[in-house]
Image (tube, rainbow, N blue to C red):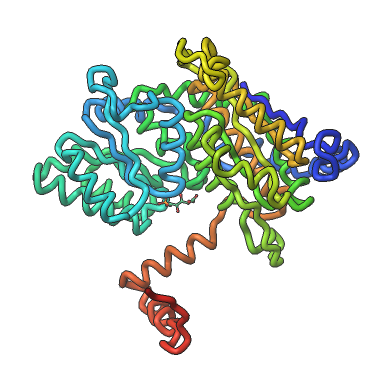
Length: 455
Ligand code: PA5
């Protein structure tokens, strides 16, 4: 299903910047108790994302069927309520899905609006007629300001055109009991789906959060969940080893974790992983309350595009990175390079496939990095399918869980995010945040203290 190849992270390949066999054995031995602790939690059904492979998707499938009849499916959400959907849509839908003719697509266009940029949002109303659109408002907490603002804008547009029938165009995905969105869904009798209370935002891709939008576009949720189930059955040790390797290299100074898919379909898995790794492991406090300021900066790149942007830095800049490739052995579509020009620049490409070229580029980059003593690993799938995509996401979530244990931090909270959320509430005048608003106003530097250049 998924291969984790860490040959080029070993000292035999990259010298002292990699791990010796002794260091690797010590890392695995030291982490074993973390592995056992995570296994014990699993037996108790914790954390919640581990139970997702066994979930019942009947209600979701029913709602997806109705949603599939719309011209547009628009996700309103941010962070963990959006990134998994983008990752899975890029992986599993046609690469030019929204541009395909409706009769070829036979499912809605899919948009993920994960920001409150005024031009993006106002512009969206110009290209998607609300009466032909279903809006899936997603928020685990049901309280996020960005998502609430989006909802208000699109509901107002719907009301203007459809009056009371606006309700037929909104689906709510949120906590089963708590929060404004749950309250709204009940009050207005909106179609709705739950996010299990013990599944946090960035671990929620394989809940209704992403399964519904994907199902509305024709992707079978059962196949995604089968991939996740395979991780639970057979991939736990591999995920633990991946977490242990990242941990050991982090402790050796690799403070940056680059993820570089050589596949356009997996491009947004790197973006999703960036949030998962950063928000789960970037923590001030250890589990026993000490200031530790842990965190490995996750960076996304794309092969081969970023060979012409980042590769110089990765090869010759500071040796502070662990570079992970995502590799696909077989692409779903061939794209042979035809006869053309006899000149040396072109002749050797004739008759080859673009997939072959892309994978050769990956091998070339890997070789150069290894020669430059830059540790690198490859996560490889045979092909991108709902099963392998589901497996990949579940695998990285599990790897993050192990890493949290190994680093002795809480991988499932995000106090730093909460602080900014509250500050936004205060700045925008939310009731109950008056004191914080006053404090923020007092923090404003005096005119004489400001350092600003203008031209
Ligand atoms: O992983 C997380 O918990 C966060 O990134 C959330 O997904 C993000 O803050 C959005 O929160 P919510 O889904 O509650 O709107």
